[in-house]
Image (cartoon, protein in one colour):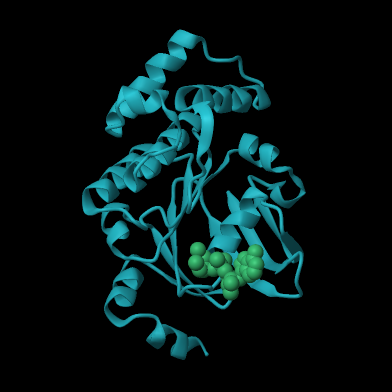
Length: 251
Ligand code: ADP
Ligand code: MG
Ligand code: MG
């Protein structure tokens, strides 16, 4: 479903190559995790897939269900079903969370050629999904992410994801700054969205998130490439031995 081939990316402003030939295929229904040392290019990969400015693809391809993602504007990628949960969720003062969600959902439906959700249907859906994530009604009325705790922001991202029903969910360090309970809630939210049509790319520093979101495949990224792939046991290996052994093995 998501197919990345030989992806090379440099910074637009500087002559700095960050991704140096990433190959990765995420099949529908599968959860792939990416781990790797700081600065290896994990966030860059997620930004490039979501269409963020500042990066230039110098070689390679990325497609979703055969459609070239790299040709699309960020909104088109979202409409095609790519969702990126940000490492640092943005605050939007003055825009109520509920209004924001409803606008995003309806924009997405429009782009997909579906009718808008009625106010009642939207309310029903958002309340049910918020409840499952233990997000209270009051938080839905507040401005997006303003004054939310780290855990609340993360849960709010998962709520956005649940409402948008993306095909390909990319989570970048969704676990950073979360206490164990919040991490469990986030993981449950993700697990509730797992189904045969949907793929996940979960970027994480720590193995502990993967105790709760059981990945099908684990990749190790280093210096702009995926240097090793394996099953969940690879994450445990990293947890116990760090990256040094793996990096020594591939160098
Ligand atoms: P990771 O998420 O694996 O920690 P990143 O993708 O954030 O790695 O970064 C990869 C490398 O690219 C790092 O060396 C980082 O400093 C550099 N980099 C990424 N984006 C920028 C930028 N906008 N300006 C300068 N350097 C950047
Ligand atoms: Mg980083
Ligand atoms: Mg990062």
